[in-house]
Amino acid sequence: MKRIIFIILFSSFRILDSMAQTFVQNPSFEGVPGSSNTAPTLWVICRPSPDIQPGFACIQTPPSHGVSYLGLANQNVASLISESIAQQLLDTLRNGVKYCFSIDLASAGFNCASNIFPNDMRLEVWGGTTLCGNDELLWQSPIVTGNDTLWKTHKGYFTPSNNYNFIRLRLLRITNNFVAYILLDNMSDFCIVKPKIFFTSPNENSNQTCSFTVTGKTDSMPASIQLAGKFSGSPLSAIFNSADTSWQANLTYAPLYKGKDTLIVTGMFANGYVTRDTLIINIPAMAGFRSENFCLEDSTTFTDTSIVISGNIIEWKWYFGDGNSLTKTTGGIEKYLYSAPNTYNVSLKVFTDLGCTDSLTKQITITDCDPHTNIFIPNMVTPNNDGLNDKFYIKSITPNTHVEIYNRWGEKIYENDDYKNDWNGAGYSEGIYFFVIRINSKKHSGWLQIVK
Ligand SMILES: [Ca+2]
Image (tube, rainbow, N blue to C red; front, side, top):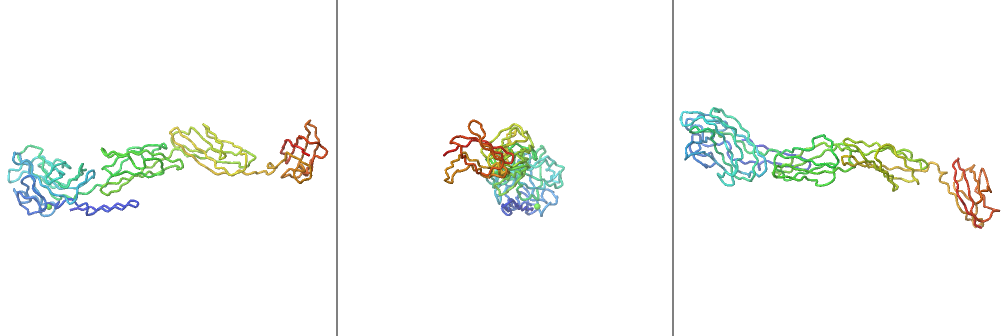
């Protein structure tokens, strides 16, 4: 008897299936050899009259396991159609679970009893909800011919469509000779086949759009299918079709994730098995840009470096971090002039013709590289000696600042090549005047008002 112990280690799951998966009692069909019309120990007779071999009806084939084996006849008379035995299983065969087992079969051939003839035949394994019930044909052996007189091991797989506590073994005669007779020995205990996951779409390593559907199948019915990966959206577990064990999940990839991702699909099965499969997925678009020139005085340059793996980028949307944005249909270089020194979060979002988006945000700091552009020029002079605006005072002035002042008729009334913040409008009446100031070759012009 072969008992198979499965140990599945997966993540935090640890499933140990051992004794719970012993199903068949006395699978070697042990009993007293040469006993006619007798079932092996722990088996019962459903239809007469099975025999415990060897030693009955001149059958001398040695057992393939133990000291005895089972002989079942199928006789071409109305009173004896197909001999069969049954037993109550130690554990329930469960709906949707895939099982495996093996059994040794042989033909009795044409023997001295002369009432056994070579026939083509099959062994049938039935599931029952009652003892000797034949509710579902779980497995049928390949044809065993009358000439197959040597033991041959057959492997069987079946998936019940209901729960069964009983099994029944029965001989099916294919050809019409008088009596078919099959020998059975060394049936293994039932084992559970580890479930498998099959991806049907997409194919491994295929490029995907950012929103796509993953479909697959399992080889037996899971309780649930769950997915893990760098995706967003719902459902995170698959929609499951119990009719054909297929499943489907619609995934949307979050734009923050780049490049390849491994999608992990985990199947949870009612029998305690956890199985998984993985799929490599390429994220098709990756937004990228390079930024240069961070002086307030000059335009900052942004160069698109986005990559597309599948499809084409059809739209670039720049967010400059100061509330302004720009939408373009080509990549390349964008220039932007900031109005104030500050730290800005600049984002580029790209859109592909496959419906995928990706975005990247970088922080840049704009500084005033020439502080003299930051000079403050007052527009009011009040020469009343109160300490406030008594003189035309230029903040951040440097040596050799050139100042010219004009009256409202355009006549120059003051000029100085090295202004010292000392002009107070003395001698001139109240009113509007105009100034032209050059600091380090930068020209500033505007108006000022004298108030007395
Ligand atoms: Ca045996």
